[in-house]
Amino acid sequence: MAREETGRSRGDDTMIDAPQFTNSKREEFFNVHYLRIYYGNHTNTNNNTMLMLAVIDGKHPGCDEYYFGRREFSFTLENDVYLRYKSFKSASALEHAIKSCFPYKIDIGAVYSVDPDKRHAYSQTGTNVFTPVERELVFDIDITDYDDVRYCCSGADVCSKCWPLMTVAIKVIHTSLKEDFGFKHILWVFSGRRGVHCWVCDPKARRMTNEQRSAVAEYFRVYKGNENNARKVALMGYSLHPFLARSYVDFLKGFFEGELQANQSIFSTKDKYDKILEMISDEDIQSELREKWEKSANRSSLSEEAISLVRWEQLKNTLQSKKHKAPTLRMCVEEIVFTFTYPRIDLEVSKQMNHLLKAPFCVHPKTGRVCVPIDPNNCDEFDPLAVPTLSQLIEEINSGGSKMDVDDDDDDDDTDTSLLGKSIKFFRSSFLEPLLKSCKKGFDASVGRVILICLMNCLQEEIENSYKTKIGKSKDSFSW
Image 1 (cartoon, rainbow, N blue to C red):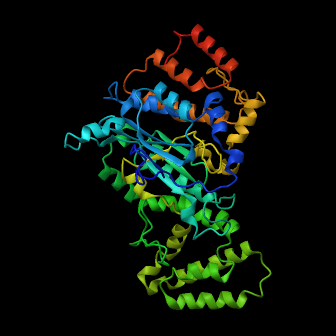
Image 2: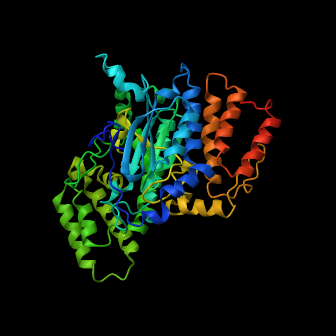
């Protein structure tokens, strides 16, 4: 999540100190020289971001010619200079700004009532005219919020054992957004380091008030406690809400008893299972299970995974046989599963329109990895450690390997072997094109050509020239 405008002024109040980047080895894989090549020679954040926003802002029902110009952007520049409330009259102006200053990070904000760059002029009138009027409904999920339930990594570190927690989060939230709220145009994006971002771009999502966004965010709230509470989830009543029941049956229960147990072995040691026993409100049951597990600790020849599975079954059987003792035990098994596996959303990001979110296809400054889209229907296959880095993209460009199939009629998935090729194709075919088709206003063919050229114009010169030639020959054949 990008922070709000706070900090020390540097003359212009849009220039402030950004958080310090502490990775001493960052220059090896991330620097302004690499960014200059990336922005100038590769399909990347500026053209793909412009493509998305040009469609959303330029074709929105009721938009005017100044709509794009009221969108907020923020740049984090070299030497940790942070610029907020930047706005641009057109997509080409945004592209020019990116190629001029090579930002280390790009965040996207709301569409405001007036040009963000001119907000101070309007504030002098004494009326609160500068206010966000539209914004995609966004979600931010960070792996660091799972540190109390993962034992392989902590902080910003991720690996193949804990990343599945993000995968389950995508499945749960994506299914609910589609089935419970009826949203169709949903884009999931890797944050570039330790989490995922979700953009809901349906018109009804963009027009939500802060109160409505808060209601949607609260719909997903399950965690009621804090880091000092042993019991972080309290499921009230005799049965689960239909959304929670579906999530439990379809995603959470199987993941908890399968992949999570295999990767984290959450019952294998005393410090691990004590944390779970404290979630049980009945102290007699806690003591019974603790005594049983302590006695068997030194006599078992089973693996950690097998020990965890055995103890989980013992816990379930004990609770099942004694749940008549207290109403709080009825949902105890489900509460444990939800505590370990349910999505931990940063709800404040979703509740307010003025929060910023990192632009798709930009590069994370601390890892050098590109913020690529994630296919929610195949998110099990996504590997955050295999996402291309900036240095890998530069190497690809230098070797002449960067290329993209520009023939929309070619269905051969093997034609594009560039590092970002599959991500860009997924972005266009699964998100952008359905969004275009849903636009209520007609999409003029000439606008389509401009946007497609914008998408391609940072490829190597010979590919670009070939593409422009092809567009010229078929300028009247586009149909959207």
